[in-house]
Every structure is written in structure tokens, then in C-alpha cells.
Image (cartoon, rainbow, N blue to C red; front, top):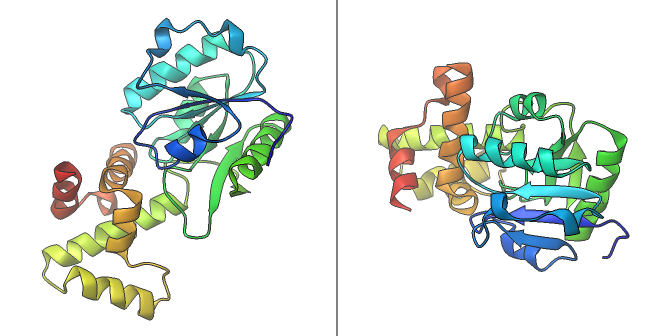
Length: 226
């Protein structure tokens, strides 16, 4: 699918959509190959939307978005799957939307947030361009809804493993046949990436202080081994 809109896409290789974005009809920019703060952005000024798909530490993400906010007059949208989206949107005026592609969905449907109709229109075309379905939500919160809920389910599965209640394969089978999940929590963890799950849980725990978001030790171990 092609569109008359021009998208500038910035990404890091650890994003699950990296290759698909690189092969799409967009202006693609690999932030691991180039230093964003040394780039002259003037030749990108005809774009309709800049989309940030970097998976980096929150402080670095914030600095990158602040830099983009200074450089561009058109809307910025960032993948905030593992970040406190509300805070980013409040602090960066040019950040007009958020997206949640960092957590692969079995239904190919992804939540997004758009402040205004210009951003919403751009994101609608972008989702169509990459062959995904978008679901507009009223607020990104911390990690949207699907990433947040599935991370908690996976974390609880790891707590069950710590308590020696069952083997990973048995827990996966129980969840698939017991509650009709498309994948078991350990299968889901492999697909999403343990580091992404840990990053979101740590952000939720830091922001809310709620112990239900405390990552299990086994999940921490998996994330740090990969």
C-alpha cells in the first residue's frame, strides 16, 4: 500500500518492527548508525509525521524527543509501549501521539493515542501502510493496556515458576486450554522479549509504587541473560 503522506521513521534495531519499517515506503533513519544530534534535518521538512521507534532508556528517549521537538514543526509520534506516556506527552509539546508496536500482538491490532485529528489521520494511513490495524485509545497511561496486562500475566507465570507450581510448558498449556489464550505466557515472553517486559514492569513499579508490578527474580534473570 502507498500513501500520499510522507513519514520520517527513526528506529533502533531492537524494535520488533525494525525490518518491516525499513522495507516500507517511508524515509527510514537508523539511529544506531547515525548520531541524531549531529544530523541536519532541513531536508526532511516536507514530511507529514515523524515516528520514533527507538527502544532506549527513558532519559535518552526524553532527550531524543526534546531534540526532535526543536527541529520539527510537524507532529511527532513515539512508541511509548514501555514508558510513562502521559508524562512524555505533557513535557514535550510537539509530541502529538503515542503508539504501542513494541509488543507484538497476535491479532495484529495495536493501540495508539492521537491528540488531534491531524495526527490521527497520519497514524491511520501509517497503520494501513505497514499492514496493521490501529485502535485509538483515550490515554496511553504507562504502557497502554495490552502491554501492561500481558506483562503482568507473564510476570505472574514467572512467580509460579519460582514457587515450583509447574513447568513452563505446563503453565503455557494450562493458559491456552484453560482460558483460550492464543499463546502461553512463556511463549508470549519469547515473542515480546524479556527485556521489554522487564522494562515496562520496572517503569510501572517506579511510577505507581504498587507491589503487583514488582518483577519476579526469574524474569529479571531471563532478561539479563539475553
